[in-house]
Length: 347
Image (tube, rainbow, N blue to C red; front, side):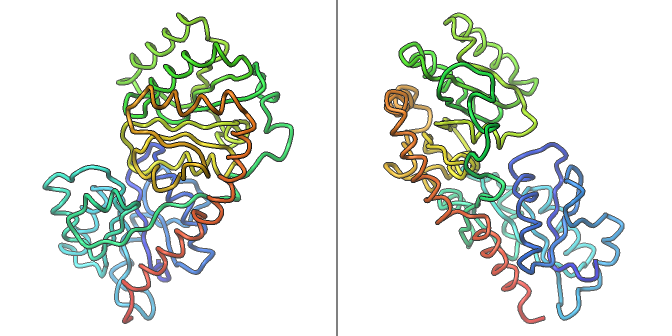
């Protein structure tokens, strides 16, 4: 704790997009000189980590500094930061990263006003903040997500039928537009026998009936061998590499990293304009973008790729170059490092 200058709390045990961001960023931040440590449950053991007991030492700032940065990404993490700073008088400066694509509730606005600095993960999320902020888009680890390299990265290794895979990954629920993807596949796949669709992700109890209806629709269409529900898979990275086309049909999204992960895996993408999708994908370069919730438009945007797989392969090459040039994880880590340094400037 003596040397830690940035604390990154994670107060959610289940894996989420926020947790994934911390897991990917923290080791890289350490490598580029950020003295950061994580705090909280549900994080891999290899991350730099401090315990709640270690916080006793946080009343003494690190050498040469007058405070530490508390980097919150959730409301409960902001609350704890405020308590530590304002009630327990711990020398902290509070930073909040917001990915929300909606107007904040009054209590959240109250919390945000008490932050020393605020970061938005996209221009759209920034537009909902009633506070000065810096925009830093998320990046993707291009070493972790990379183009196919071995036979394991092919459709043949999946054991599924067809020559090409089209995929939709993430939690199965209405918000994520899984039903829009399934409807498009039911419409298109009978006309394009070389393609098979895969859906990976978990349906929580409250969304299980939604997922069951989608599976019933697939069975009714007689396409259960060509629209395959994988459930949660141990390694989603290999499935990104097996795809020829990735679809992100969300109706609403905080940020949404999966199109980045697909592009870094050399896969073309079709996305809605939810979240930051419209800020990461470029029509004609990385794929097509449609209005969120517009099922017919989604089907229309997917069809040219199924009709001409060479187009998908060509756009995949462009996607890879685009994401490597503009959205590497190193860029996000470096931008956050600059914010931390500004907050800690002056000792």
